[in-house]
Amino acid sequence: MYLQAKSEVTLGKLSKGLLTAGEIHKAELVIFRYVQRDSLPEVQSQHSKRNLKSLGMYKLNPIVVEGVARVGGRLGNANVSEDVKDVKHPIILPKCHQVTDLIIMHFHQLAGHSGAGFTWASIRREYWIICGATAVPCVIGQCLFCKKCNAPLCKHLMAELPSVRVTPDNPPFYNMGVDDFGPFFVKQGRSHVKHYGCLFTCLAVRAVHIEISHGLYTDSFLNALRRYISRRGVPRSIYSDNGTNFVGAKQELKENLANLNQRSISDHALIQRGIQWYFNPLAASHMGGVWERMVRSAVGFSLRYCLNRL
Image (cartoon, rainbow, N blue to C red):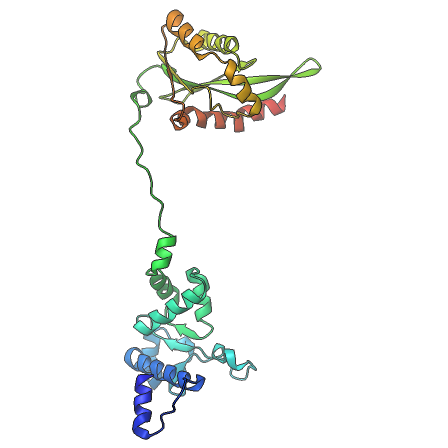
């Protein structure tokens, strides 16, 4: 606009007041002529078809309107409004130029910082950028606002696995985790009785053993533990939750957890069986993920499928 006004001052045609739409349009044409002369001189000349083929614009059939090269085509007689008249013959712009980058960023902001596809579709209503499908993502990738909004979240560093998880040379169920899940209903006679599942999983090889528990009280769990030991042998150590985060815990499960005497379970295991029992801290439910995941696999797929077939 400054150069346009300076040239009009020398000719004595400078108009005072606010800029008009016609003056802005003339300034845009001057900028586009400069860009095309600087980066695409072959387009305006239209003499060398070989150069057009090398630039990838031979199929665009470029035409020159008001000194600006535009995309040709068969829409010259289309009846469109003045607001979208550039849709018929979009202005050709090079891929790598500062003006092209500014136009891409302008449409990107108008589109509410949308993605490359929507921005490229909006640009093509007025401009045809050579290799625009690759130019638009490159420019959008430099948008600071999008970088802040789409920045990857911070990831916590995972702690080292305990030794019981990385010692596969021990027998299966040498170190295991245990958890309760349920409830589910089992048909007994003409009625349905509520039962729970007790899952034992090896911490090294991830083998799974499931026993049925008739309730969430201590004696029922000890009976399930005895049945497990009679089949798999005595484990060296057992890891479990602290009694507040069992899988599938609902209101009824939370009320019954108060009756689960963990001290009695621990004393029974230590005195009679020589088992080392470890309970997770109350505020560290994430430490039980090794058996929580196996509960989901067993309940969500295998066990539920078998129970539905009964």
